[in-house]
Length: 345
Image (cartoon, rainbow, N blue to C red; front, side):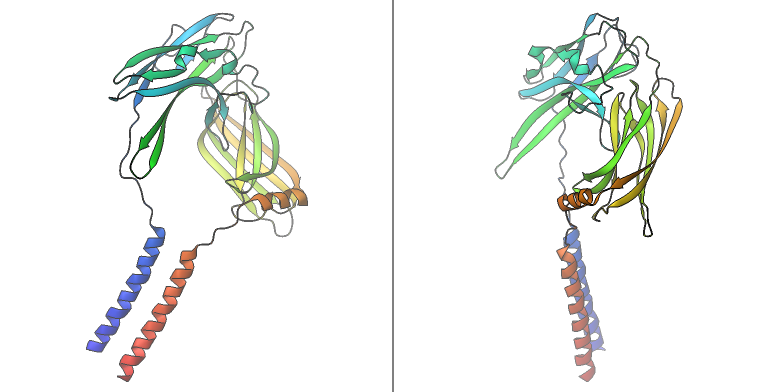
Protein backbone atom coordinates (compact mmCIF):
# COMPACT_ATOMS: atom_id res chain seq x y z
CA UNK A 1 0.00 0.00 0.00
CA UNK A 2 2.84 2.32 0.92
CA UNK A 3 4.60 1.58 -2.37
CA UNK A 4 1.50 2.39 -4.40
CA UNK A 5 1.04 5.67 -2.55
CA UNK A 6 4.71 6.49 -3.12
CA UNK A 7 4.40 5.73 -6.81
CA UNK A 8 1.32 7.92 -7.11
CA UNK A 9 2.96 10.85 -5.31
CA UNK A 10 6.10 10.67 -7.44
CA UNK A 11 4.14 10.58 -10.67
CA UNK A 12 1.97 13.45 -9.47
CA UNK A 13 5.07 15.45 -8.63
CA UNK A 14 6.52 14.89 -12.08
CA UNK A 15 3.24 15.90 -13.70
CA UNK A 16 3.16 19.11 -11.68
CA UNK A 17 6.72 19.81 -12.81
CA UNK A 18 5.76 19.40 -16.46
CA UNK A 19 2.71 21.65 -16.06
CA UNK A 20 4.85 24.18 -14.23
CA UNK A 21 7.19 24.29 -17.20
CA UNK A 22 4.22 24.88 -19.50
CA UNK A 23 2.95 27.67 -17.29
CA UNK A 24 6.40 29.24 -17.32
CA UNK A 25 6.43 29.18 -21.11
CA UNK A 26 3.11 31.04 -21.20
CA UNK A 27 3.91 33.61 -18.51
CA UNK A 28 3.41 37.22 -19.48
CA UNK A 29 4.50 40.05 -17.25
CA UNK A 30 2.20 43.07 -17.08
CA UNK A 31 2.72 46.46 -15.56
CA UNK A 32 0.52 46.81 -12.49
CA UNK A 33 0.46 50.58 -12.63
CA UNK A 34 -1.48 52.66 -15.13
CA UNK A 35 -0.29 56.19 -15.80
CA UNK A 36 -2.63 59.04 -16.63
CA UNK A 37 -2.16 61.85 -19.09
CA UNK A 38 -0.55 65.00 -17.74
CA UNK A 39 -2.77 67.39 -19.68
CA UNK A 40 -6.25 67.82 -21.07
CA UNK A 41 -7.68 69.74 -24.01
CA UNK A 42 -11.11 71.27 -24.61
CA UNK A 43 -12.32 72.82 -27.89
CA UNK A 44 -13.83 76.31 -27.68
CA UNK A 45 -16.65 76.27 -30.19
CA UNK A 46 -16.58 79.10 -32.78
CA UNK A 47 -19.58 80.93 -34.21
CA UNK A 48 -19.49 78.74 -37.29
CA UNK A 49 -20.01 75.54 -35.30
CA UNK A 50 -22.90 73.63 -36.92
CA UNK A 51 -23.61 71.08 -34.18
CA UNK A 52 -22.81 72.43 -30.71
CA UNK A 53 -23.50 69.04 -29.09
CA UNK A 54 -20.33 67.60 -30.60
CA UNK A 55 -16.98 67.62 -28.81
CA UNK A 56 -15.06 68.39 -32.00
CA UNK A 57 -15.05 71.16 -34.61
CA UNK A 58 -17.88 70.78 -37.15
CA UNK A 59 -17.81 74.17 -38.85
CA UNK A 60 -19.19 75.92 -41.91
CA UNK A 61 -17.86 79.29 -43.09
CA UNK A 62 -18.42 81.46 -46.14
CA UNK A 63 -16.07 80.90 -49.10
CA UNK A 64 -13.04 83.18 -49.21
CA UNK A 65 -13.11 84.06 -45.48
CA UNK A 66 -10.53 83.47 -42.77
CA UNK A 67 -11.45 82.21 -39.31
CA UNK A 68 -9.82 81.33 -36.01
CA UNK A 69 -10.63 78.28 -33.89
CA UNK A 70 -9.37 77.93 -30.33
CA UNK A 71 -8.45 75.20 -27.87
CA UNK A 72 -8.07 75.28 -24.09
CA UNK A 73 -5.07 73.30 -22.82
CA UNK A 74 -4.56 72.53 -19.13
CA UNK A 75 -1.58 71.04 -17.28
CA UNK A 76 -2.81 68.90 -14.38
CA UNK A 77 0.59 68.18 -12.89
CA UNK A 78 2.88 69.97 -10.42
CA UNK A 79 5.71 70.09 -12.94
CA UNK A 80 6.50 71.78 -16.24
CA UNK A 81 5.45 69.97 -19.41
CA UNK A 82 6.04 70.50 -23.13
CA UNK A 83 3.30 69.85 -25.69
CA UNK A 84 3.43 70.03 -29.47
CA UNK A 85 0.34 70.66 -31.58
CA UNK A 86 -0.37 70.65 -35.31
CA UNK A 87 -3.08 70.18 -37.92
CA UNK A 88 -3.24 66.80 -39.65
CA UNK A 89 -5.08 65.43 -42.67
CA UNK A 90 -7.73 62.74 -42.39
CA UNK A 91 -7.30 59.44 -44.23
CA UNK A 92 -8.16 55.75 -43.84
CA UNK A 93 -5.66 53.30 -42.38
CA UNK A 94 -4.92 49.73 -43.43
CA UNK A 95 -7.97 47.55 -42.78
CA UNK A 96 -10.33 50.48 -42.18
CA UNK A 97 -10.88 53.27 -39.61
CA UNK A 98 -9.78 56.88 -39.66
CA UNK A 99 -6.20 57.98 -39.16
CA UNK A 100 -4.37 61.28 -39.47
CA UNK A 101 -1.04 62.51 -40.78
CA UNK A 102 0.58 65.92 -41.09
CA UNK A 103 1.92 65.49 -44.63
CA UNK A 104 -0.07 65.26 -47.85
CA UNK A 105 2.01 62.32 -49.09
CA UNK A 106 -0.03 59.20 -49.70
CA UNK A 107 -3.39 60.96 -49.80
CA UNK A 108 -5.87 59.81 -52.43
CA UNK A 109 -5.74 61.80 -55.70
CA UNK A 110 -9.38 62.78 -55.17
CA UNK A 111 -8.41 64.76 -52.04
CA UNK A 112 -8.11 68.13 -53.78
CA UNK A 113 -8.08 70.32 -50.64
CA UNK A 114 -6.26 68.71 -47.68
CA UNK A 115 -6.81 70.48 -44.35
CA UNK A 116 -3.12 71.29 -43.93
CA UNK A 117 -3.18 73.33 -47.17
CA UNK A 118 -5.82 75.74 -45.85
CA UNK A 119 -5.26 75.68 -42.08
CA UNK A 120 -2.46 75.74 -39.52
CA UNK A 121 -1.82 76.19 -35.81
CA UNK A 122 -0.45 79.61 -34.88
CA UNK A 123 3.35 79.43 -34.93
CA UNK A 124 3.73 80.48 -31.30
CA UNK A 125 1.29 77.73 -30.22
CA UNK A 126 2.95 74.81 -31.97
CA UNK A 127 5.22 74.13 -28.99
CA UNK A 128 3.70 74.82 -25.57
CA UNK A 129 5.65 75.07 -22.33
CA UNK A 130 3.13 74.89 -19.50
CA UNK A 131 4.01 75.46 -15.87
CA UNK A 132 2.51 73.46 -12.99
CA UNK A 133 -1.33 73.60 -13.06
CA UNK A 134 -1.19 76.17 -15.87
CA UNK A 135 -4.04 76.65 -18.35
CA UNK A 136 -3.74 78.43 -21.67
CA UNK A 137 -5.79 79.05 -24.81
CA UNK A 138 -4.20 78.51 -28.21
CA UNK A 139 -5.52 79.09 -31.71
CA UNK A 140 -5.38 77.96 -35.32
CA UNK A 141 -6.38 79.67 -38.54
CA UNK A 142 -8.52 78.28 -41.36
CA UNK A 143 -8.65 80.02 -44.75
CA UNK A 144 -11.77 78.84 -46.55
CA UNK A 145 -11.23 78.35 -50.30
CA UNK A 146 -12.79 81.03 -52.48
CA UNK A 147 -14.31 78.47 -54.82
CA UNK A 148 -17.24 76.47 -53.52
CA UNK A 149 -16.51 72.87 -52.64
CA UNK A 150 -18.81 69.92 -51.97
CA UNK A 151 -19.09 67.62 -48.98
CA UNK A 152 -16.47 68.17 -46.31
CA UNK A 153 -12.77 68.52 -45.63
CA UNK A 154 -11.71 66.21 -42.82
CA UNK A 155 -8.69 66.48 -40.55
CA UNK A 156 -7.70 66.86 -36.95
CA UNK A 157 -5.88 68.96 -34.36
CA UNK A 158 -3.17 66.78 -32.85
CA UNK A 159 -1.53 67.23 -29.43
CA UNK A 160 1.34 65.20 -28.03
CA UNK A 161 3.56 65.38 -24.96
CA UNK A 162 6.93 63.64 -24.99
CA UNK A 163 7.96 62.29 -21.61
CA UNK A 164 11.01 60.53 -20.22
CA UNK A 165 10.57 58.84 -16.83
CA UNK A 166 14.05 57.93 -15.66
CA UNK A 167 14.61 55.29 -12.98
CA UNK A 168 17.74 53.68 -11.58
CA UNK A 169 17.41 50.69 -13.89
CA UNK A 170 15.87 51.92 -17.11
CA UNK A 171 14.32 54.80 -19.01
CA UNK A 172 10.62 54.57 -19.84
CA UNK A 173 9.26 56.90 -22.52
CA UNK A 174 5.53 57.64 -22.50
CA UNK A 175 3.98 59.76 -25.21
CA UNK A 176 0.56 61.19 -24.37
CA UNK A 177 -1.50 62.30 -27.35
CA UNK A 178 -4.94 63.67 -28.17
CA UNK A 179 -6.71 64.20 -31.47
CA UNK A 180 -9.70 66.51 -31.95
CA UNK A 181 -11.41 66.24 -35.33
CA UNK A 182 -11.72 69.33 -37.51
CA UNK A 183 -14.47 69.06 -40.14
CA UNK A 184 -15.07 71.92 -42.58
CA UNK A 185 -18.38 71.71 -44.43
CA UNK A 186 -18.65 72.79 -48.05
CA UNK A 187 -21.35 74.90 -49.67
CA UNK A 188 -23.02 71.77 -51.00
CA UNK A 189 -22.60 69.48 -48.00
CA UNK A 190 -25.08 66.70 -48.76
CA UNK A 191 -23.14 64.36 -51.01
CA UNK A 192 -22.74 60.59 -50.78
CA UNK A 193 -19.68 58.34 -50.47
CA UNK A 194 -18.76 56.35 -53.57
CA UNK A 195 -16.51 53.30 -53.37
CA UNK A 196 -14.52 52.09 -56.35
CA UNK A 197 -12.38 49.00 -56.73
CA UNK A 198 -8.75 49.84 -57.46
CA UNK A 199 -6.60 46.70 -57.36
CA UNK A 200 -5.56 43.52 -55.57
CA UNK A 201 -1.90 42.58 -55.27
CA UNK A 202 0.52 40.68 -53.00
CA UNK A 203 1.73 42.69 -50.00
CA UNK A 204 3.53 42.17 -46.72
CA UNK A 205 1.20 42.51 -43.74
CA UNK A 206 2.77 42.15 -40.29
CA UNK A 207 5.81 40.83 -42.17
CA UNK A 208 3.75 37.95 -43.58
CA UNK A 209 2.39 37.26 -47.07
CA UNK A 210 -1.02 38.78 -47.78
CA UNK A 211 -3.27 40.06 -50.53
CA UNK A 212 -4.04 43.77 -50.37
CA UNK A 213 -7.44 44.71 -51.76
CA UNK A 214 -7.45 48.45 -52.43
CA UNK A 215 -10.72 50.40 -52.52
CA UNK A 216 -11.20 54.15 -52.99
CA UNK A 217 -13.81 56.52 -51.63
CA UNK A 218 -13.72 59.18 -54.33
CA UNK A 219 -16.27 61.51 -52.76
CA UNK A 220 -15.84 64.09 -49.94
CA UNK A 221 -18.09 62.30 -47.44
CA UNK A 222 -17.49 59.88 -44.54
CA UNK A 223 -18.86 56.35 -44.60
CA UNK A 224 -19.49 55.08 -41.06
CA UNK A 225 -20.56 51.79 -39.42
CA UNK A 226 -18.72 49.99 -42.19
CA UNK A 227 -18.69 46.20 -42.55
CA UNK A 228 -15.92 44.80 -44.75
CA UNK A 229 -15.92 41.25 -46.09
CA UNK A 230 -13.31 40.24 -48.64
CA UNK A 231 -12.63 36.69 -49.85
CA UNK A 232 -9.73 35.61 -52.06
CA UNK A 233 -9.60 32.16 -53.66
CA UNK A 234 -7.03 30.61 -55.98
CA UNK A 235 -8.35 28.98 -59.10
CA UNK A 236 -7.34 25.39 -59.69
CA UNK A 237 -7.69 21.87 -58.32
CA UNK A 238 -6.37 22.64 -54.84
CA UNK A 239 -7.97 26.03 -54.33
CA UNK A 240 -8.46 27.47 -50.87
CA UNK A 241 -10.27 30.54 -49.60
CA UNK A 242 -8.92 33.25 -47.33
CA UNK A 243 -11.03 35.88 -45.61
CA UNK A 244 -10.78 39.38 -44.20
CA UNK A 245 -13.78 40.68 -42.24
CA UNK A 246 -14.25 43.69 -40.00
CA UNK A 247 -17.29 45.45 -38.53
CA UNK A 248 -17.89 48.87 -36.99
CA UNK A 249 -15.27 50.57 -39.12
CA UNK A 250 -15.21 53.82 -41.10
CA UNK A 251 -13.82 55.28 -44.31
CA UNK A 252 -12.59 58.87 -44.53
CA UNK A 253 -13.70 61.16 -47.37
CA UNK A 254 -11.52 61.18 -50.48
CA UNK A 255 -9.34 58.34 -49.24
CA UNK A 256 -8.25 54.82 -50.09
CA UNK A 257 -8.35 51.74 -47.87
CA UNK A 258 -6.45 48.48 -48.27
CA UNK A 259 -8.02 45.31 -46.89
CA UNK A 260 -5.26 42.86 -45.86
CA UNK A 261 -6.10 39.19 -46.44
CA UNK A 262 -3.36 37.34 -44.57
CA UNK A 263 -1.64 34.12 -45.64
CA UNK A 264 -0.31 33.78 -42.07
CA UNK A 265 2.96 31.80 -42.30
CA UNK A 266 2.09 30.09 -45.59
CA UNK A 267 3.88 30.94 -48.81
CA UNK A 268 2.12 32.84 -51.54
CA UNK A 269 1.70 30.82 -54.74
CA UNK A 270 1.68 32.08 -58.29
CA UNK A 271 -1.49 31.65 -60.31
CA UNK A 272 -4.90 33.08 -61.05
CA UNK A 273 -7.00 34.35 -58.17
CA UNK A 274 -10.51 35.66 -57.71
CA UNK A 275 -11.47 38.30 -55.14
CA UNK A 276 -14.98 38.99 -53.91
CA UNK A 277 -15.61 42.09 -51.79
CA UNK A 278 -18.74 43.36 -50.09
CA UNK A 279 -18.84 46.65 -48.19
CA UNK A 280 -21.85 48.01 -46.32
CA UNK A 281 -22.13 51.19 -44.29
CA UNK A 282 -24.05 54.38 -43.59
CA UNK A 283 -23.74 57.83 -45.09
CA UNK A 284 -22.62 60.28 -42.39
CA UNK A 285 -25.24 63.01 -42.58
CA UNK A 286 -28.48 61.03 -43.05
CA UNK A 287 -27.49 57.47 -42.00
CA UNK A 288 -28.65 56.13 -45.35
CA UNK A 289 -27.60 52.44 -45.73
CA UNK A 290 -25.20 51.93 -48.63
CA UNK A 291 -23.52 48.85 -50.09
CA UNK A 292 -21.04 47.87 -52.80
CA UNK A 293 -20.02 44.50 -54.25
CA UNK A 294 -16.92 43.81 -56.35
CA UNK A 295 -15.78 40.61 -58.06
CA UNK A 296 -12.47 40.62 -59.89
CA UNK A 297 -9.95 38.14 -61.30
CA UNK A 298 -6.22 38.81 -61.16
CA UNK A 299 -2.90 36.99 -61.53
CA UNK A 300 0.15 36.66 -59.30
CA UNK A 301 3.39 36.02 -61.17
CA UNK A 302 6.05 33.57 -60.00
CA UNK A 303 8.51 36.42 -59.54
CA UNK A 304 6.09 38.44 -57.37
CA UNK A 305 5.23 35.41 -55.23
CA UNK A 306 8.89 34.43 -54.79
CA UNK A 307 9.92 37.96 -53.84
CA UNK A 308 7.12 38.25 -51.28
CA UNK A 309 7.88 34.89 -49.70
CA UNK A 310 11.57 35.77 -49.49
CA UNK A 311 10.85 39.00 -47.60
CA UNK A 312 8.33 37.46 -45.18
CA UNK A 313 9.22 36.09 -41.76
CA UNK A 314 9.25 32.35 -41.13
CA UNK A 315 7.08 30.53 -38.66
CA UNK A 316 8.73 30.90 -35.20
CA UNK A 317 9.99 27.79 -33.47
CA UNK A 318 8.48 27.26 -30.04
CA UNK A 319 11.35 25.71 -28.08
CA UNK A 320 9.07 25.12 -25.12
CA UNK A 321 7.21 22.49 -27.14
CA UNK A 322 10.41 20.45 -27.34
CA UNK A 323 11.02 20.93 -23.62
CA UNK A 324 7.49 19.82 -22.80
CA UNK A 325 7.77 16.82 -25.12
CA UNK A 326 11.03 15.79 -23.46
CA UNK A 327 9.49 16.21 -20.02
CA UNK A 328 6.54 14.08 -21.11
CA UNK A 329 8.84 11.29 -22.24
CA UNK A 330 10.80 11.48 -18.99
CA UNK A 331 7.56 11.34 -17.06
CA UNK A 332 6.49 8.15 -18.84
CA UNK A 333 9.90 6.52 -18.46
CA UNK A 334 10.13 7.42 -14.77
CA UNK A 335 6.61 6.22 -14.08
CA UNK A 336 7.22 2.92 -15.85
CA UNK A 337 10.56 2.42 -14.10
CA UNK A 338 9.11 3.11 -10.67
CA UNK A 339 6.23 0.78 -11.42
CA UNK A 340 8.63 -2.04 -12.34
CA UNK A 341 10.79 -1.46 -9.26
CA UNK A 342 7.87 -1.40 -6.88
CA UNK A 343 6.26 -4.42 -8.57
CA UNK A 344 9.47 -6.48 -8.38
CA UNK A 345 10.06 -5.34 -4.83
